[in-house]
Length: 293
Image (cartoon, rainbow, N blue to C red; front, top):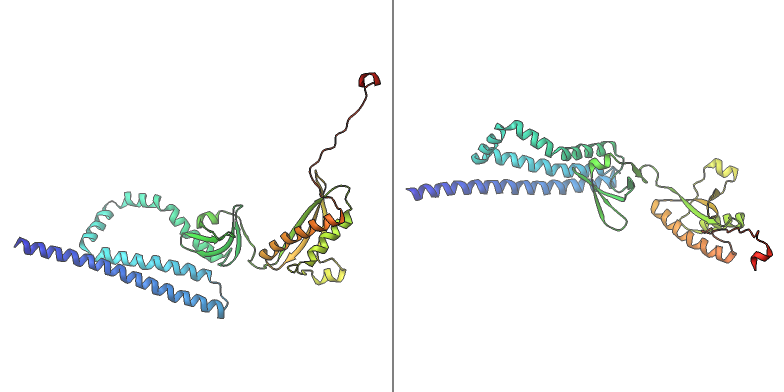
């Protein structure tokens, strides 16, 4: 009789375990199917309707959370042992609420910040952004908790949403991807100023990434495509700055790097001296001839 009762108890427990595993398996399958369907919808919508995929990626991650939360509720409500455990937890709801509220404060802050990022859209998936002064790259994904940014070394930077909400965001692709890049070159005080400015302008215009971003009014006035100005008298010479436009930030970076090399070669050919650290020593010889012997 005892053996029969033990077997019944064991069978009952196994049924509960199998039920819990079955619910989790179904939740996993439903979650994967929803992610697949939403992913296909995002791709088709982005191509045909030209919609922003950010909110759909966020919704895709939110669906996982909802599906597994429902699965957990079903398991706790269906298995008596878990149901009793839940009742015990609810008995101390005051203490539990305080503990959970304190422990999950950061998590809820990230979720709320994630919703604000999706609603107000300071950036979207695929945008080139700078977060604060430290992180820069392409937005790859926005989840319930964090945002993933791929930097230019192909590394992934995972930043909590609450941190992003408190930082200054520089978005290079929010409305207009064109970028005005600064090409700054210091030259010596005695270097030919006009000649150096013309070299900066010529080498910038030669680069294939340099575009004409002049307005109709500027074209009518005959303003140059690449402006070059002397912006400061520095400790080492005169600071020149060229203003060249490129279609994107990446192309602007290439333009500046290549133009620096071209300017260096031209300055050597034209014998134009760069500004560099130096010192002028002034001595006074007030000693008498007898003292210098």
